[in-house]
Length: 396
Image (tube, rainbow, N blue to C red; front, top):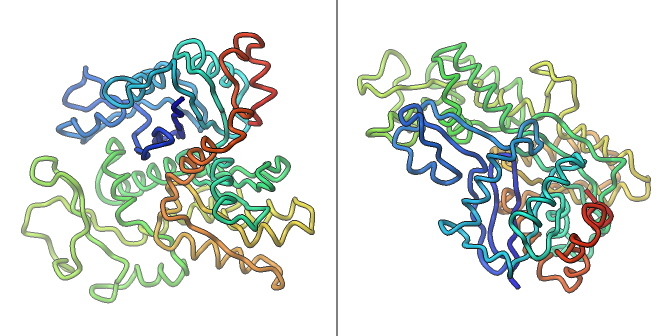
């Protein structure tokens, strides 16, 4: 019996059989400006000749799966002959869903997985639980860890103790990668170039040039300097999709510091945007979101737990999700949590090698567990007891 592991995120789906490798695939559909009528699904993105003004059709809104038609088409594509050629009669699935997912969405998910696709057995689980499983497997002596999952729609902070989540201490910050990209689009549109329709391009800019500042005010001062001394400033060459397929940063020695470029490329000059955008993760109040930043929320979450457990959480902080890939992210989380924590506690912040696929790898490990059979709901169970058995078994 094969097991398919699908970490179904709001931006990308991490999918693969438990005995094979993982692929990271956009979990959405696209329409391009040029071919208005044709809809591209998932990784057909690469076939679009001109991805400027790319229009995203997302199954997730505000972190919850609401657009089932799109999700079905993405899944049909992933499970179908182009990709994984799933033989449903002989396949189990481990699939992730958000914390405190609405029960109506859970019911639809059961129905689609069992009745439409007819998987043999299903395990629905939070992505964080898979990450925690992976972490405890790598660090067998630890009993507690706190998973910081900073994704597309939200950042969740969830303490796990012996692979059970501590519901009373879960914190959600409503800042994720989508908000950061949108904010960067707004700043650039306001300051230099109208890019409100260019989500795809500006997301690439964000990934290429943004970083987390270790000292915000110091970097702000550097960003004001003129010429050579301004080490924050970069010139980003925008793609034109004929000769330049993908945007890139101009090497420092080729930068023209005063006057214009002769080369005719389209240039974005970025200074404080580079660190002011990721800063929102640490101070959402900068853009009027009245919430705690990540380090403060980690400390707050841990302080909701029994005192004798707290030191165990501080020394097992695990970062997952795409936003943790900003350069300087881990160090900043460490230094701020360290400042907010009593000196007699150890603080350790772990950034896995691949924070995006970390929970997928946890799912792969769970499928190899001896007690995997006891965790899943089989098709027979579902046909006999319906949605209720899933509610009892899955702790969402």
